[in-house]
Amino acid sequence: MESKYRIDDYVKVARSTAIYPETAKFTYPVLGLAGEYGEVVDEVFLDAKIKPAKRALIAELGDVLWYVFNTMLDLDLQVHDIADIVTGGLRCETFEDICFQRLKPRDGRSPWLKMTVHIGQLAEVAKKGLRDGYGSNLDEVKRAVCANALAQILVSLCEICDKQHLSLGEIAASNNRKLTSRKNRDKLKGDGNDR
Image (cartoon, helix red, strand yellow):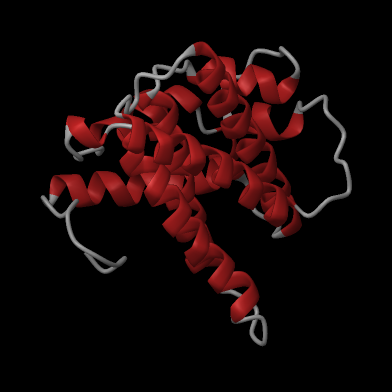
């Protein structure tokens, strides 16, 4: 069952398909996260007259997930540690663990708006890293800000999946199939989903 998709399996493929230059570490996935999230919002809200196609939504949320995980990895943040923040310390092995064993109750605010805030926090750190020349070499305070923002983005993704009747494991598995296919066909570079 794909909702039991293992985090470690996702991380291996996500990392193996991260082909951006070392000099773009951290900055590239943060910019990509902002761009892909914009596409998701466009799919869900700006085309609200029609219900977003489940397949398109899974593809876009998969791209968001890829950028979230590569941001974590670029900052040498342990994926399981970020997941532990989400669940209040429960060990997470699968995406289902992240979404269904969260201890923090939902606060009633829109997960879309919360995600926007946390992506903005990451972008602010990345922007200052470019300006001040520290890139992905963050001090402990900035790393903690990023770790918390990434954890809260995962919480928002879980809530969005729940509202859209999707599984984060299903999204991760679909994203890995797409990326593995592109990698095998040497099509990781380029634009659009039809590569």
